[in-house]
Amino acid sequence: GARLRAQIAMAFDMGEETLGDFVALILAFLQVASAQPALIKRSQQINSEAIARDEAEDIPVGNAIAIQFALDGYGLAMGIGSTNLTPKQQAAFRETLMGLAQPAPADSRPKRKKRRTS
Image 1 (tube, helix red, strand yellow):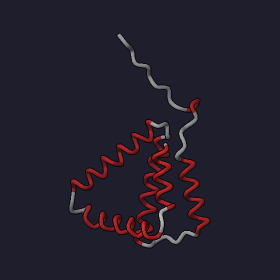
Image 2 (tube, helix red, strand yellow):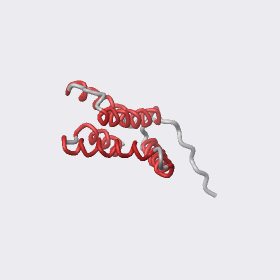
Image 3 (tube, rainbow, N blue to C red):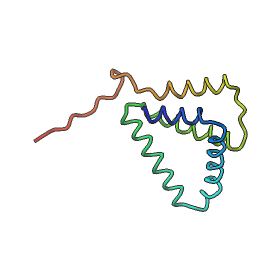
């Protein structure tokens, strides 16, 4: 879950200049994505791999998906200017996502099947 928490931190802790570059990247991606099926397919692959990695690190899969979608939506909202969260609201949102990005307690994880050896 460390990479997932780093992704959350990056989304909230980047400086103004980096945020501007990030927003420009999101908007450029949206502009070309509809005309580039290979780009969409690669994005789907990257997202699937990230969710599988997070699940392998014992992050509940629903949490991993919710975080990914929340960060995507947050980035999009920043890009189009549809959000104006106060610093307190941003901190609360960041903290909620960080809480979701914690591995499940060992006693609540699904039991993994042991592999038989011949």
